[in-house]
Amino acid sequence: MQESFDINDSIEGIWEKLGEWTDSLILSLPNFILAILVFVLFVIAAKYVGKLLGRILRFKVRQDSIREITIKIVKVLVIVLGFFVALGLLNLDTVLTSVLAGAGVVGLAIGLALQGTLNNTFSGILLSFLPEIQIGDWIENNGYAGRVVEINLRSIVIKEADNNYVVIPNSQVVDAPFKNFSRTSRSRVMLDCGVGYESDLELVKELTIKAISEHFPQKGNEEVEFMYKEFGDSSINFVVRFWTDVTSNREILLARSKAVIAVKKIYDENDINIPFPIRTLEFNNKLNIDRSSED
Image (cartoon, rainbow, N blue to C red; front, side, top):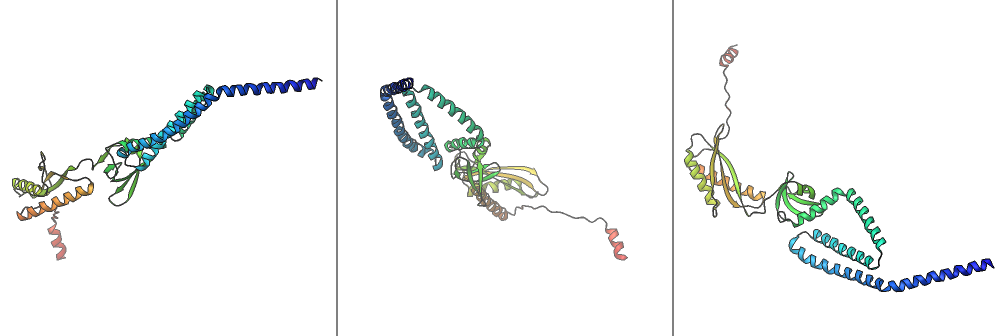
């Protein structure tokens, strides 16, 4: 009889517990439905936020990979926010606290493990929004010079003049100074040269400025600048500076080559000498040479 009594009590306890759970489920059903609806709305909102962000980034970011990863990150953040709001509607404060604590620990561990990678990633996102460097620009950075062909979340890729590609981590580009030849349409080109000591220096200056001005018209307040620098070993050296349309290292070399041809031509027409180093050997042991020849 005792065993039958215990079984009946257990069955009644189970039914009472199931009844309590059913009542609790019925009472929580509106919040549960509301939480599902809120989460679905956040998922839909993430989709439209991604589309809107894509339209905005299309005019700001030229790199497709940067736009795509940025849109994905924003969509995930919106969905995660909806998940936490849904948990709050279900009054699952303990679960929400545990999830946030676990996310913090996991995020810290991932951040420490991928510190260098994350640094390059955030630097890549920063570079994609900087107007100072864009795809197609000719830059100098970390001892390399070339045209930017790609900006991704890990590095930028530049193509050097010798047709080789150089991959530079984004963090190094952000942390180090870089020179961008393409940000300005006109730049100043410098040409070094020298003339013989017998030359008329005033005439040399006049002819040089004339030759450069004819081939490189100056605009606005620009002017051809000519300055003598020093008395060299075999020439009086000078530098001439002028403005022209250049946006890459190659165009600078072409402009300097054109200037060399122009200056050499006008110097030849006016018998102006551009000397080259000469080494003179003197033999002061003539007496010894004569004696050795007699022997």
